[in-house]
Length: 444
Image (tube, rainbow, N blue to C red):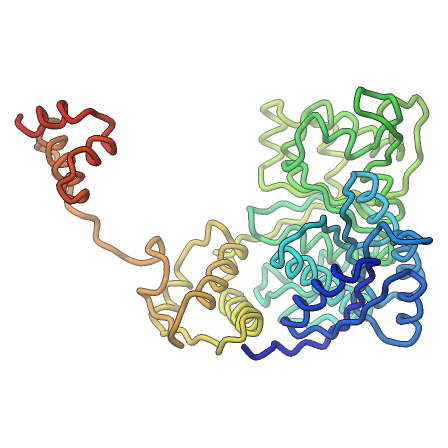
């Protein structure tokens, strides 16, 4: 397969030659230009003499830790991003990595796909930073790296511009798949704090009993497994932004602690009586109506009003008719390049179906569809039958409601038996009955 041409230069730093070679071999198949270093000192030498877009570094390194390299890169190379890899994962390492400026954190032994996805995420963030820091907004097609020309999206872009100039708390409302994290990142990376950490936290993906310690950290001895003091994600985001996704999934107890953070600008680590002052912008996101939750007692009213300084509503894709074809072209170009395939063409009928579909999964659903079509389609044309059945018009089979339950059951049993090639033992197993019962039912 022909390599996909990419311009990004990637420096791999690891004291294990086998790890370097594995990463090099995988990333070179994607067209990246790879450099390598076996120590932090060697890595610094490469950085001084070559423009590097992304540094991939192990944490456990001889003499000087990879975390020191993360800090060195962040404080000396504003146009370079960092991906941390480690074979010794811990919350502390993750927090420290984010604190010093890493954008992604990958645990060995990762799969090839996990590596590709992590690298692509870092490069996407690098491109977004380049756009926003240089104030080169690709309006009207992709301000802040977000595809959109519709009137509703232009309102979102204008709000991002105004919001990024402040350090104000923000609520981002929108259905799943609308791009709430993209908007949060756009606010952060176009703000004066763009070089500070952006720390995303999926509140719905962390078990309730761990969320408090992950957010605020804990002191040694605070609970049974607290063998050392560890900082939380709020400390990791110091000077920058913490993005709390799915805020509606937090408990009332956690909400009370978040309210204290907003009111007093300080956090209490679990097991500590001393507060820690923080300087962090809080952006939250939700796909639920918080006002309704407040009225039902599921969300604190005082916290809601503390958070709701600026509210950004991300429109669902069904309200962005002008953007659907822009997004289709964008994802077609991206995945065709990714898999070294020719760009597919859609018939007018297929495009009409896509335009009329209600898109419950929004932009994420559209992206996943284009991804699948590029990978699975052997031809060059996409027509209506190539689209998922849920999108296509179809006549429902006639439903007959004048048969007895016994008749319906007998027909179903015969269909199962036919599908099993007449094998009664197999059919009985599927039906959850024994062979004797099967014979009796067939002779009703």
